Image (cartoon, rainbow, N blue to C red; front, side, top):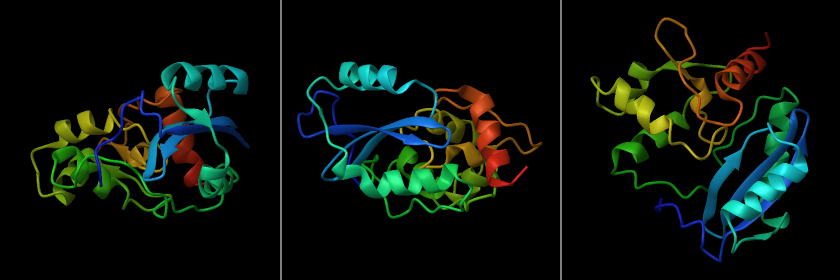
Length: 177
């Protein structure tokens, strides 16, 4: 895995596409995905946001065909596995890289506690650090940080647009509640 690229990297492209829950956005390049925006914005606002955040990037829907298919499947209540989507992430040797890789292993419909994820990466006392790393996740859904909750069942935080309410909705969606 590589470190994510600068927002001014001219090799990046973006897309906006519809799902059953509303428009989503994605940014990436030939080596992988760098950003996902979950359904929250109107399509025109999302387009404006991506143009502003990535001024050198151009729209390219073709690069994201598989991601679009998977996202549409997910939001139509189909168990979906995003492990085939290449992502530009911190090195697996870094703490954040270990957290993101382990988080990608959480199965659809399941939740893990922050401490459980810390145990998974061999750092049993790092639950807060795991939460901090997940708070910087730019690839929600593909790195399913919405599946990580407090041990007592509370949802914890969610830095994606839509916040904790969206996290709870996604968990309930996966568990068919």
